[in-house]
View 1 (tube, rainbow, N blue to C red):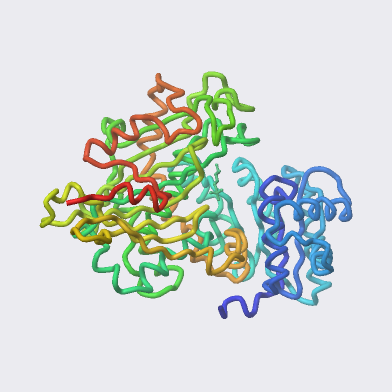
View 2: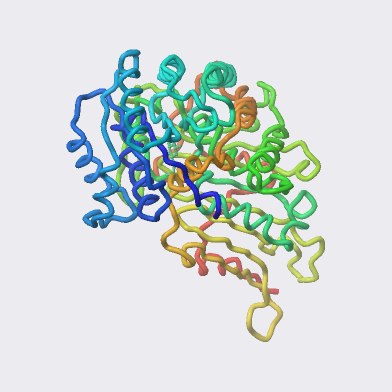
Length: 510
Ligand code: BG6
């Protein structure tokens, strides 16, 4: 882990320092990195917000939230107190140049106290509409004038379609070079998502099977139990396609389908991922209904608890047509995957939280068992990303007994059992940004290709009002049309959390 050895002194400036992401994810991530000795000896976090606050007030607010959101909750220890002393609060009016001047003075004073010019990491945890103003002020004042030392982290969504993303990128590139821009997709920081690469390219036995020759189809699910919570204002008009598919699910698709990189250098990995995005078959407007299903949840119950429908949630229009669910079938036009469907689905207020990749292998070419090959459960590899963190291989075995009967069995690798203290996604990503390693961040061409892959769908949906919304009950697995999407090819959505007993229901006697 040599990249973490010499983290340079760094000043971290968080735009949106009083926001939700900062309190839930960013401060806990910095605290844990600090406790694990991953921060430079010299560092300072400047949290920016509009209101006037003293450092003491802000630090006690951070401490309060660390007690709730940090994975190391024992915040009474002196080390956490020391960590807090590295945080200061600075009031900033995003639109006023004078505010950036005083921020500049503060940064210069910290540099002076460090006895050297520190690296600068600007974290934009704000509504995307502020990015232009912030970036042009950073340029005007010369806050990020050293391309070797200064970086910017941008949260998703990066634009709202391909055209706006291009404009945003052009604007940003007037202040920052590509290698200074860290576009974050927090799924790439998850241990189990990174483990896909380790699993695929650290083993030789799966690679020969990893193609159209042996795989029947692939399913990627990211299901959430939560609704839009307090984020109605953001979510309304964004929807699941832009919020989840364009980034998280397409990134998981990349990890699953990419070719082996020549090395683990950032650009070698990112080149192979960009190839996958380029190879996604673009669909025509008239094909959208054939390949993509959208849904919106109605009132229902999750784990027995009644929950309201999307249109009744806070900040949501009573006739909203924003989708909270998407299922789609993707083909990759390349040698490895030609003709193999990749089914992607994501939804809010689903029966249970689960993110997984399911690889279903082709059936046996011929079965000597009397019930034929239809009666056999296909081999499957199930990679559970969260909340279960495991890899399961399902295959047929002989049922113990005198007759030659089959039953499915599985081998499990439980990632969680190996380590209960895995870092949170944001810890990994922030540590990488501090170390200047962009591997797990999205390069511009990836973002552009991902927008390109979904732009037609967005356009068609904008022009055609869904007349059947809401079309799935909270606490279900989504609209029926999503089942039909797979049924057309004789496939169905596979539960990733079958218990041993449920698996054994597939027992087949000859
Ligand atoms: C975010 C989306 O990027 O990811 C949210 O904006 C979603 O809508 C969240 O809830 C899911 O992240 P996780 O890590 O809880 O699966």
